Structure formats: structure tokens, C-alpha cells
Image 1 (spheres, rainbow, N blue to C red):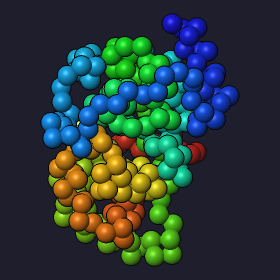
Image 2 (image 1 turned 90 degrees about the horizontal axis):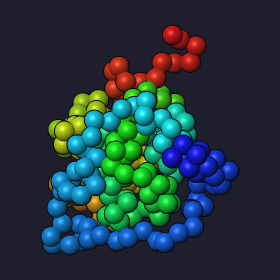
Image 3 (image 1 turned 60 degrees about the vertical axis):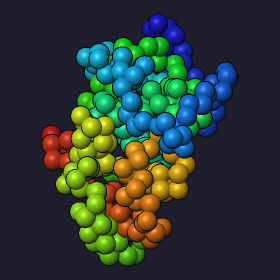
Image 4 (image 1 turned 45 degrees about the vertical axis):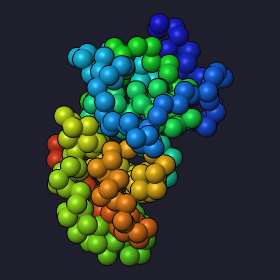
Amino acid sequence: MFKKTITLALASVLLPCSVAFAGPPAPKAAGIESKDYQWAKMEGEMKAALAVKGVAKKGEEGYEICGACHLPSGAGRPDGTFPQLAGQHTTVLIKQMADIRMGLRDNPTMYPFAKELVDPEELAHVSAYIESLCIPTDHGKYEGADAAAQIAKGKALYEKQCVECHGKNGEGDKAKFYPVIAGQHYKYLLRQMTEIRDGHRRNANPDMVKVIKPYTNDQLVAISAYQASLQMPGAMCKPKGKK
């Protein structure tokens, strides 16, 4: 197992993240487009992984294959191509990886890497390791000249309809599979909310779809700008040079 993981990790570092390992395409499970869709259904691999007590130390080696795209720090890419993962709830990580592995969330770039986690136990350990990482403070933010106005507009929208699930500081809710959004890249947030609104993210929470379905593109920009400005007390990485 150790040799296999190191080999795959080295391959992921040498290859661009857009280059997938050769193999069969991802499966396709019925998602939100199906009348029988049930969000966060407790079954299969997700249920099995959630039943495991993940150990961060045991997940460090397995995370190496993820680090090529999401970086060893879990910071992802400010341009929004790869999300910031550090500090994310294990429940959210397990759900999203299980959804990708079963074809409920369409992510052809990540699928070849996600499927290399051999079983629910490794999935739980890698998730625990990612959750243990501090959230970087130098993530991608909205950089327009009207940033202050957009953040203020987004704050009003967020506090009206988002705070109940995602929390005052973007801390989410581990028990309910609501993700941490503090420290997430602006461009990634905007892309995901646009895809959820437009029905392109097939493993989306129907309750969230109802909330953001009426939002205009401008409103999504404002909310994303505000969300990208959030910080979780006690979870953020310390500024460089400080102990």
C-alpha cells in the first residue's frame, strides 16, 4: 500500500492536474434531476466511511495524491480551479468524495484521483487529515474596485438567507453536511453557486437550490465576495512570521 501510494503521489506531482490517470470513465448515478433523489442519503460507502473514526496521522500519506492539485497545505488555487480544502468538515469531505466516486457529482478531473482511496477507512483517515489543517488566510478574494460595496451587498444577502446553515463566520455545520466556506476562494464559490443555481451540480442540496434559484448573476457575485471575506476564529493559519 505504501509503495502504491508513493508511486501515485509522484505521478500526480509530475502530471498537470488536468491530466487524468488512464482508466474507465466515472460511473453516473441519478442526481437532483431524478424525482427519487435524496440529498445526503446515508448508504453505501458514505455511510461506511462516516462510521469510521478517522485518524489524521493515518490520512497524511493518503493525502499526498491530493496535494498536487489542492497543494500540501490544502489551500487549493486562488483562480478557483481547485477549492481550498484545509479545515473542511470530515462529513462534507467524505460526502463529496463518495459522491464523486459513485458518479453523483460530476468531476472528471478529480475522479481518477478520488478512486485511488482504496476503501471507506482510508477515505475517513484522509478526511480527518484535511480537517486538521489550518485554513490559509491568503486565499483568492474579490478584487474589483467596488470590493467594499460588493461585500456590503453580499453581507446583507448572506445574513438574510445563508447564515442559518453556513453560520456567522462561515463555519458550516458538521452534523448536517453544511460546508465550511470561510477561507474559500471567491472564484470557486461563484462557480459552484452558479452551477447549483443553474442545475449543473447534480449532488446539490435541494434546499439550497430553492434559496439561490432566484438570484441574479450580480447577486451571486456579491454573496461570493462576502463569503470569501469570512474567517473562522481559531481555525485560520497564523500570519507568516508569527508563532
